[in-house]
Image 1 (cartoon, rainbow, N blue to C red):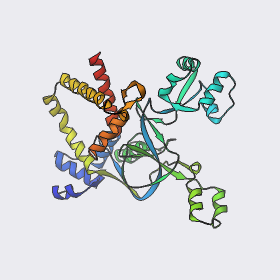
Image 2: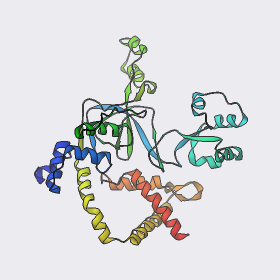
Image 3: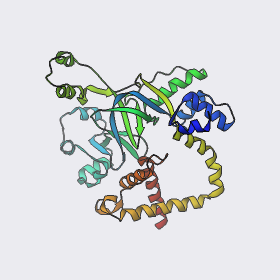
Image 4: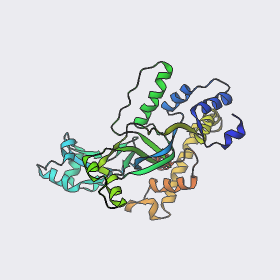
Length: 334
């Protein structure tokens, strides 16, 4: 593919991407190679939702900001089902309901002790995506269309494996997962969902007086469930920016070793932590409560807004980096 034509394309098919890599790297690259690199999270694939589909929007939160449900240890399902509390402690837990994980330390001593003794569990309302982050999905559905990345955090990874293994003589993959297929764009996770029709839908057909009545019934969150497949009218592709970032990464390690020592990288991380702490003093928006600790989520949001579409500068990644930087700075300061 000519460089002029390549620079005009926002995305490429997998075949075109393989041809481009073959030309740039001067070695044969196949679609199988691309799929394997995606499974290894070295190269990010995307999907073009041609006719659109429905999804629940998810927000990525720091684990201390995520919501949790406190329940008696060993009985999460019955507790979530709504079983009546049998003890004074259980009555307290039922009254509390869902709270921020970081607020557990503000509860009374009996509950704090029960949590520390593992007699009470803190169940995250969302889904953990790393040791420090949780994604929480909204109940409502919204229409998605256009290009989204595959984060390879849920069932979408199995779907890519299903494409890959038959090409290399591997086993047949039967994708399955309770949380369905996830997509990613601009620092948010989206969980694809599908609607299950009920008898009430058939009974209501032709009887509703307005479009608003139909929309209210159709978008009722209780009728939508995580989708186990991508929609039929879509295509797996590679965004040009992601492909360029991958090509750059192949040379980056050698360059980095020649430019920075390990000690210099640590000094840079400590400096970023100091900058983060300085930003927190600019206004209450960038601080957590009365303690005055930096609110990495808010600072990362402001940084990601400034970065725009620059690859690798999503809010979640910046927030994680700021957290590491603060730890390095606090250790340096002592």
